[in-house]
Image 1 (cartoon, rainbow, N blue to C red):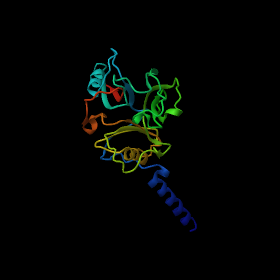
Image 2: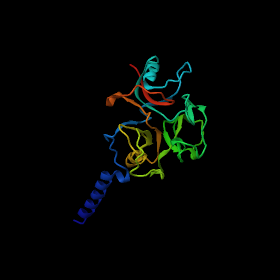
Image 3: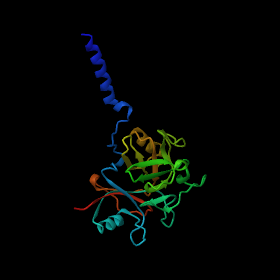
Length: 246
């Protein structure tokens, strides 16, 4: 009979672990405020794009779709992947197929969200890992296949960027990227105007230890599986998931 209380004790512990995911945040990606897409790099193909084969800027999801059609690839998901200069050149670091196309920008105390320290880098590696880190901790490596720099960081080591204020009246459409506890990637774009604090809180509440702001009012997302097909725009870098056509 003594075994019964012990068994009940362990069953209770098991139930608590299951209910709370043993300390992990529960992942509810059905937040109606956002267009949400997750990527498992071991199962899905994600690449960064800037120019086509003729050296011309792709600029938007419509042109990217055409570019991929010629290569017998289907566009599954796309979003603008960082800020850019007036001529469409990526602002800060851009790496494509392991080649540095634009260098890391380490300027400090300049104007705009990009320079709201700390800013950061989102990159992919040859062993199918996605990483978001602060610019100051980024290290160039031959294992990096794609990278884009942007700013500010939204979540830093599980904490919301210290400059952001809850209740802020600075509202814009915003898109960003976070890394989930299981290593998968969480992309989100707000459907309506939102503050940086509330946007960062979405990533933090879903377990992203680090998350990066990609851009603001110019942001667009193409995700036909959720009936969201924004094909217009004029960007620098585009982050896209593709698959081979049958």
